[in-house]
Amino acid sequence: MKYAIVEISGRQFWIETGKYYDFNRIPTDLGKQITLNRVLLLNNDGTLLVGQPYLESVKIKGKILEHFRGKKTIVYKMRPKKKTRKKQGHRQDLTRVFIEDIVIN
Image 1: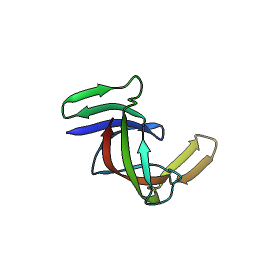
Image 2: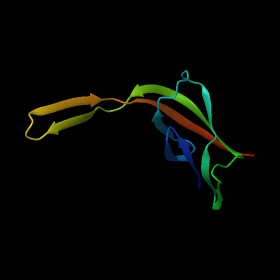
Image 3: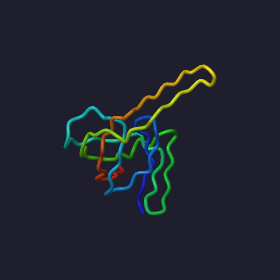
Image 4: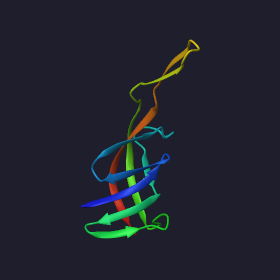
């Protein structure tokens, strides 16, 4: 089993080939190839490579499938005994990326 742990959009993701993942909005056109180079860890069929902090020799190739907006989250603030209430919704802009290959130099 080949997988990598990658840092992208301020978070860390467990990445495998042939799957798609939702990241914060990446300002790129649909169908374009992207390269993820902030690889923290790579497991190549039992061989474990750990970066200090990143692995320079490993690149992950992906393809942008779509841009969309996530589920709505409700933010509700209330101050007790003050009759102050504030209800607010938020939808995050997301990008769906299909992981094609993990390349080791």
